[in-house]
Amino acid sequence: MTESLENLREKIASLEKELQQEKERNDSFKKREKIAEMSSEVVDSNPYSRLMALKRMGIVENYEKIRDYTVAVVGVGGVGSVTAEMLTRCGIGKLLLFDYDKVELANMNRLFFQPHQAGQSKVEAAAGTLLAINPDVQFEVHNYNITTVDNFDHFMNRISKGSLTEGPVDIVLSCVDNYEARMAVNRACNELNQTWFESGVSENAVSGHIQFLVPGETACFDCAPPLVVASQIDERTLKKDGVCAASLPTTMGIVAGLLVQNVLKYLLKFGVVSSYLGYNALLDYFPSMVVRPNPTCEDNWCRRRQQEYAAAEAVRATQAATAAPQPQQQEEAVTHEDNSWGICLVDETPTEPRTDPAGGTSPVTPPGAVVGGLAPGIRVAYDRPAADGAEDDSDNRGAVGSSAPPAPDVTLEELMATMKSL
Amino acid sequence: MVDAGTKKTLASIPLLKTKAGPRDKDLWVTRLKEEYSALIQYVEMNKSQDNDWFRLESNKEGTRWFGKCWYVQDMLKYQFDVEFDIPVTYPATSPEIALPELDGKTAKMYRGGRICLTDHFKPLWARNVPKFGIAHAMALGLGPWLAVEIPDLINRGVVVYKEGGGGPVTSS
Image (cartoon, rainbow over the protein chains, first blue to last red):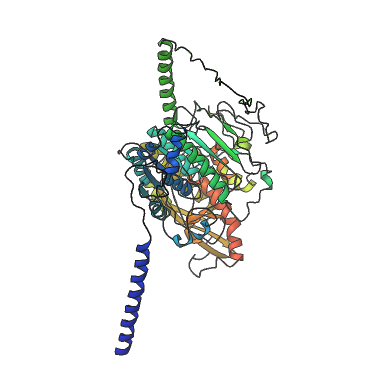
């Protein structure tokens, strides 16, 4: 007995020593200190020098402003985690991360997460990695499912009060992988009048999209059935037996890149922000279009935002009409004193319109669907019945029940009891 | 798109009327009463046809549902726990039915044991908002899923019969 106790003491001592060494090794990793102000000084110790160079090159007017912005990323999976990393490396002010999932080894075909993080919650694991990459960014993480009643209220609260100044976040990015969660983000953003981006990758991993949503001004996610980028494969030949979804790090990385690129353009006010941009990986085709809201959208808040937008537009129009017409600025022709080499600028923009590689995927516009039509190569996932409530034929709808509705005089408690006693 | 049997079943489940979700307070209570009535009628019909295959109940707010479902093969009853939450966007989006104990045992599932529905389910649901309810989700979603997946799981030995666990095969 005493001997075994002695053995244990020795073992503890050796383990303690090992732990001490491990700790020292960890401490020796150089942690990057916080940086109070973004500098454009080009030295190899400045993590922001290449970003601040965007100013010198005239791409972005005021890059430092990125530190004032807060972005909420909903869904920290294949697209969301990469999105969060890009924004972190760009020096965003604050990131809110929402996800209820854990890291699994089955996620390792995607970017960002590492095998040793398996079992950790995605938001905790992500915040750990991202904080080490850039300690200047503030993180707020929420490990829950936003679609349930209790969490949804909290989610709405964080979206409306989660910014650096405790106001609404500057933009919400939906990087979720299912329709229910997208509809929840849509509902929240319509209610809060919050600008957001939707993103997605198809279940067959060979197409994706991003969409910019400004409540009232552009279509909301519920204005039409989900838009899908035609994959160029006969969908009937797709084998779905045995698996729900495929994924590729490439497609997800590309979609995250397109998403963050447009977020940067929106926040830092350069270039043109895409309204809807699709990606067909099989053809390397990128259809783009503007999606206008549906006046008969099922979402009450969307319709309300549309009215508000129309009213604001009308005011803007009257103001513009009464304002004195601005004299058109003449573009001066650039002339050089000598040009012995005969160098001149040639417009390389192709004038021919892009042909439709989707080959006859004529855009179908069902009643109450996307107003303004769809770009070639994009279709709606399915039709909806006419918005006036007219019935389709029963065959098409799959089923029509005929039974009588419940008696209104029965209380809910009685019904619950009846159900339980069955 | 839906086989004749399922179609017949669907036709006998009452359609719902009230378009209301769990955030709609009083209207949600009305919707919940319709949900319960449709479910009661569906279960009673299943019993009368000797095809009783699930029981469900909810918390008092009607936002969280749980119960049992079972599948009979070779006179043996295989029973599973069922659970799902009613999403805030219900009934525009269907509930995501889960069988947590089968999580990780079949590829036809998303994380947490949420069943992978056919390509037909979501379009069909979307076309029938707000008329379809929980009973329809069971009949169109979980029922066909069990019929395809459980025999396969039994075959592969992933699901084994538990003595007494599911109780005797009952006929009413």
